[in-house]
Image (cartoon, rainbow, N blue to C red; front, side, top):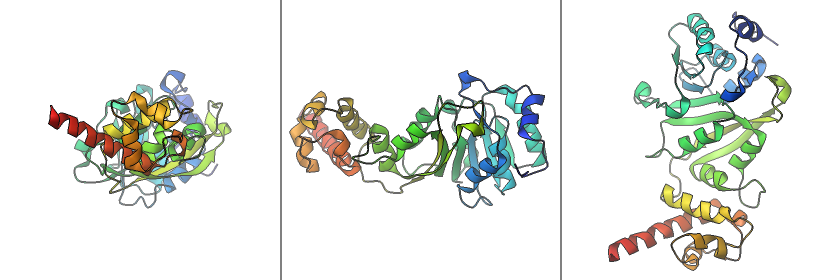
Length: 288
C-alpha cells in the first residue's frame, strides 16, 4: 500500500480511536489507500471541485480526495467516534475539510453550497445506500445541485442501477436511475479490501445527471413502474390494472403491446405511459 500523505496508516487510526466497524451503521471500512485514490480519481478533475462525502468513517476516501486536490470536502458522518480522526485530517489540510455530524438522510447540503455544484463521492453505508440514491434521483426541480455521483454499492444493487430492458436486474430502480442519469459500473472491489469483510463484492458506480430527461411527472413514473414491476411475471395488461386507469390507453400512448412483461419495456416506454397517466388524471380532474 503506497502512502498518499504523511498521516498514519488507517489501521493505526482505527486502533487508536477504537473505531471498530458497526453493523448497525452499515460500516465496512476500506483501508487500501490505492483503492480509495482510484475512487477519488473516478470523479474526474478535483482541483476546483466541492465534494460531498457520506459516511467517511476513519477517512480513507477523505484523505484521497484531499490529496488529489479537491478544493473542498464536506464530510457527513453520524458516528461521533469518527469525528476525532476526521479532525486530524482537517488539521493536515487546513480550510479544505468541513465535518458535519448528521444523519445523511436528513442532511441538506444546499445552504453550504450556494450556487456551486457539488460531486457526491462516497463508500455508502450498505444499509442506507439505495434509499439515499433514490432521494438524490428524486430531487425537484431538476437538474439537481450535484453534477456527478461516484458511489459504492453492493454488486447486486449496482447491477440494478445500471440495468436496461431485457436485463435480469432491470426494475424500478433502473427505470428511475436511467431516466434521470447516465449510469455506468466503473469497477469492482473485492470483499478482502474491507474491514470487516462483507460477504459480497462491491462496485463503484458513476451517475451523471441528464440535464433534460424525457419530460414526465416523477410521481406518475413511480406509479407506473411500481404497478408494472409489482407483478413482473405477469403481462402488462394484468399488472397495470392496479392503476386507476385503463391499461389499454397507457399501452396505446407508448405504442407498447400489453402482452409484454415489464422487464421488456425500455425507460422511454415507462416515461410515455407516465405522461399518459398524468393526462388522464388531468382529464378526470377537469370533468369533476
